[in-house]
Amino acid sequence: MSHVEGSININVSPKIIQQALEAVEDAPQWAEYLQSVSEVKGRGAGCTYQWKYSQKGISFSGQTKILESTPGRFVMTTLGGIPSTWTWTMLPFGDSTELRLAIEYTVPGSVFGKIADKLIVERENQKAITNGLAALKKRLESKK
Image (cartoon, rainbow, N blue to C red; front, side, top):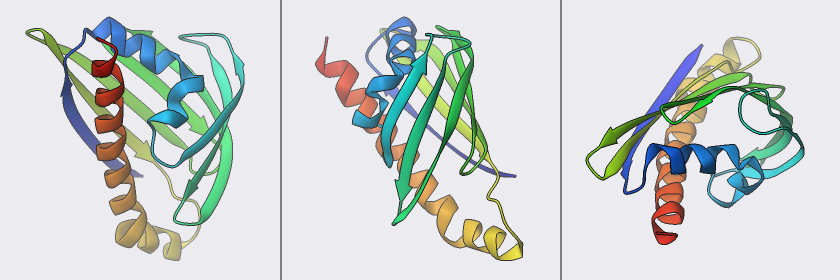
């Protein structure tokens, strides 16, 4: 299993970040490589939806289920493509919130898949986290 993570301070409350994460249909506007979200069923914990993702010319799709959604923690798991668990932690920090994202994922395939993960995929995933967090920050702070 592979792991990438990142964090950023956002000048909004944890509740506003939670609401943004629950608005899964808006995620392609700030989540790098996420092409589309469809068939959204529910909101918050228990919500499921389909997604399409494209990274470096490789496209795949799958389903996400939100396992937990509180102003302090948001956890989702994906099936299909590259199975993963995304854990978002929101820590109040004065008038802002430190948002942390940790992703555990498994690249399918043989030894070559694991080599590709260490050489290419992990670096791209780390970049995607950094860019996605910055885009979410910009989106949320512009609405203040």
